[in-house]
Image 1 (cartoon, rainbow over the protein chains, first blue to last red):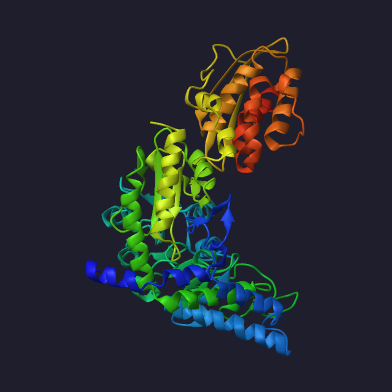
Image 2: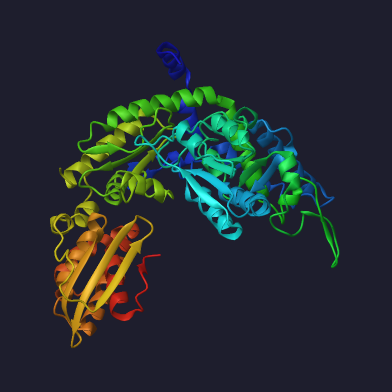
Amino acid sequence: MSEAAALASAATYPLERIRDDFVALHQQVRDRQLVYLDSAASALKPRVVIDAVERVYGRDCANVHRGVHVLSQRATAAFEAARQTCRDFLGAASDKEIIFTRGTTESINLVAHTWGRSNLGEGDEVLLSGLEHHSNIVPWQMVCEQTGANLVVAELADDGDVPLETIKAKLSDRTKLVAMAHISNALGTVLPIADVAALAHERGAVMVVDGAQSAPHVAVDVQALGCDFYAFSGHKIYGPTGIGVLWGRTELLQAMPPYQGGGDMIRTVSFERTTYADLPAKFEAGTPNIAGAVGLGAAIDYVNGFGFEALEAHEQSLLAYGTEQLQRVPGLNLVGTAPRKVAVLSFTMKNAHPHDIGTIVDSEGIAIRTGHHCAQPVMTRFGVPATARASLGMYNSRRDIDALVKALLGVRKVFPL
Amino acid sequence: MISSDLRELYQEFILDHGRNPRNCKVPECSNHGGEGYNPLCGDQISLKVQVEDGVIKDIGFQGSGCAISTAAASTMTEAVMGKSLAEVKELFQRFHALVTGGEDEPDFDKLGKLAVFSGVAEFPMRVKCATLAWHTLQNALEGEGAPATTE
């Protein structure tokens, strides 16, 4: 985007209206106006999402897919409408490819324990990148232990990027599956998923994408990405917790065994034999998180109402401003400066441990995350026990960054160089 | 700009022990040892203790952590040096009650310098930082050698 176009979009971005919609923003924390910079851990929710969840429990409160009565019909209609919203959001070929799960973690576990256990064997390779969240490492480790397959890792470069050449060099004829984050939660790095998927397919491998951090921040089209599975969570895209999606290609999902057994996922049951339901019910055993799915649909509608072009322009401008302003803090070191990033600012400060930084900025009403961000291998790669991380969302402003910088200068006073 | 709670937490005494921890060493002789880990923030501590006739003769720790956990480990080693195991146990109970706000009127005489950690009670998320070294010591003295964890 040109500078002029960026300025024009900044002038029209309805920041104040958006901030009004996020009711949790409007509170005092430790006698200060809350500054929320922890959206990569969990994003705040707009009023429309809270209303949608309340409508389910306050009016359309019944089980789905079972009752003949009006409330059950309404609940089913709202639940299935949310599935349709998710299908359109991802560009999926069919709403049968949208499986509701508890979140990204369960989505990845589902693929690992069904596709993985049926297709991986002794000596096969599962390729990950060095920036993965534990939820895209541990399920594969577990299935590798069970099947005799091996984990292979494409290492991080010094700027937190995973160059395509590194990934290419780690692919082999034994690679059966490539599982990578679209965007790193700890560093904000954007991986070239479309290119990786094309390389994986050249080797005949299946491509799994952890989309927990990309769904809220960039337009996602699974056809353009060319992946085979894509997982994301509701609560990171301004929706409820405890709901997420696994998208997979129909032919793969059909060939996979079920994940959990129970109600809703069967066609017929007898003590001798059970036959399974068609997609997506085959993978949705038990009563689902109905209000969560409906709330997720409302969140996606809300985000779509502004469009990702506007959101990305706003967040990229905040990233540029934040990257520049944080340099004002003496002894601050940004961790993760890849050329393609979203608005995640991970950093360490000389003489101040991230946990102490977190407590001091919290006393100013500023919420950031400190720790290993469920990505311990990333911390090991950079030789730090933890980082402090400010992660931004659609409701953040330059004022939020100014408040953070001011608080970090206060940290410097407690822990001088 | 800095609140009084925060000033209470980050007193100069604590900051000094955080910057220049005492007994940050491996003792020449040790017959007890333990490892501690706080998965929440990645704090790690390795503790070695020499106990003779039921008394702590030497103690040293190594590890990495925030100012609170480092200062807590440093002050603990000073506080328990030369104390009997029964006295150490009692001291940990007093310290734990102090940092969790579990005691209305802490016995500052018996706590000695450890009383500076009273500010931690206002920061529940930091209790684990203050107690990691103590849990590790307890495990080293009583446990089967399994790593102490704050979770």
